[in-house]
Image 1 (spheres, protein in one colour):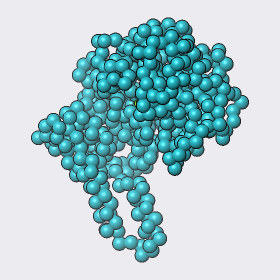
Image 2: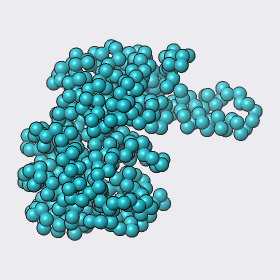
Image 3: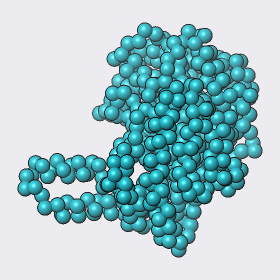
Image 4: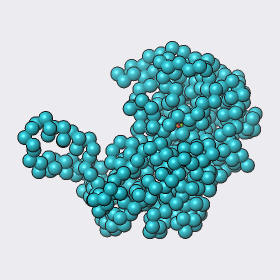
Length: 469
Ligand code: ATP
Ligand code: MG
Ligand code: MG
Ligand code: MG
């Protein structure tokens, strides 16, 4: 079996042999890029190289990049536990050309790796191209020998790649793998595409433009290549399993979670085990970089991820903090590739344990309230916004945790009502504030309050230093 760790080096080694510079993963918290919450693709660290602003001593590169998609333009938080192929944290394998090779070499390198070095059967593969990219269409025919019915033309929504609202972008071409007719889903472009039968494994982006904040697009100085392949997805293919959560790495994490909660891996709690295994990775990698749970920005995304995992542990029957006990399993699986996990192990576990302690104080009571308020609701019903806000404000339930908790029962949450309750609370705080009499000071205070949002009830720990991180 090809392990995840072997595959990572196999990919990077292949591109290194083909003249690419091996570059380390950049941090999840992008340096000097306030437009982006977390690194969500391999190209992020090369953004300025594509636009020509920054020069590097090499013109081609390869990486295994840590990515988090749990907020912003690419957000897969709600997919975790529901699809076979999405994680909040994953590794993106990539090869890059900065004005060096373009479409033909990129297609040739990708096709050779997949079908020759890794031996994937060509009749299991299919590709998409941007609708008017005749060049890419022709190259797939010529280089890979694919028949025309295996090359699908699709529109901008799926085949035009953008990192965010600004930055380098371009048409792309994606490679899909067919996991077989026992699994529901159809080929790319078909109405059943969203099923998990045909899984997108690799995206080749032909970087040609730079998206400006004013909506206009300018040409890049040199056409370039940016590719991204999900390590966990290709590991599933290479290990002969359909589901990312059945690869060696996830099996180990899920086994650890099952062990800590006394749950059965294939029992009714399987979805919770997947969520815990997934969220364990994103929280640990973020904390290893110094992100801490808080009530705003990146810290709040982290807190949402942590609390979701904690609720799922509770669902499995855990009454004590357990997530922090899973950190060593992650370090065993990924510590060699990512030494920051080894260095940060104690700090990660302690940060998770503190957050568990904080949240478990109010989680049980919050769940009781949620239960009571939704007992009479049937499928398709909506929980009122005031209750969702109370859960948020008093019991520390991020809105998406409440949504996640109700999703299995097909109950929605009145988001407008939630927002209104939040706005009302802010207005009341403003009224009850007599004011310092200095307009300037007051406007600073309210500006801050608006930006930071209401303070969550953190139990009684707020009195002590330990309660605050
Ligand atoms: P999908 O359509 O399946 O959500 P995507 O088109 O959003 O994937 P890209 O932005 O093209 O993904 O990213 C490049 C590659 O990274 C994908 O082809 C896939 O292999 C991998 N990938 C993307 N998102 C995830 C995720 N949430 N978890 C695991 N792998 C991912
Ligand atoms: Mg996606
Ligand atoms: Mg896609
Ligand atoms: Mg894609």
